[in-house]
Length: 196
Image 1: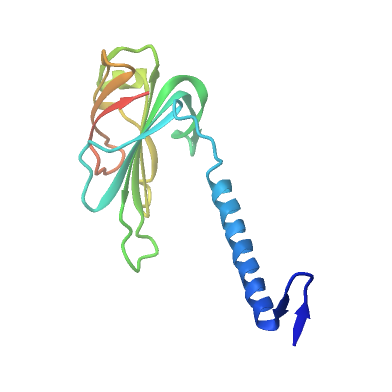
Image 2 (image 1 turned 180 degrees about the vertical axis):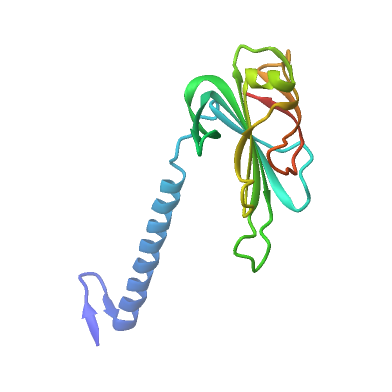
């Protein structure tokens, strides 16, 4: 069977091939639209910056370091005196260091993570704090695992913090050594250089 076209006669086989080419073109068009849509998210790289970790990270997990400009830590308290931080818009710089231990296979409660949050003023060029003076900045340690009574965030009051703004364009050097008596910890030291 054949169909007569103004210009040429098409066989049924040619019509099927033509339809399959149209189908492939349609799929490619949809794929192209999908790719364009995925790449359209705008980010403000000047506000939040993730860094390659220079601090020692335990081999049984992964670590991340993020710096936010024009942010603050909003600290709310629950269960009496346990702090809980939330990053909100503000005039300062907020740092987050996070360690996540690789999950234990076949364990429903095998997760473990530690978080350190630091907030300091953007105009701070040379900050040296020790002991109880660490609370002159917002400085919290968080531990999350299936560990009854030893979960949540704690204020850091034992240790030493140094933040220096280097002479190079918006480059900072951060050094933190700390311990907490509230809960066991794996991360006790952070050394990072970062740019905002």
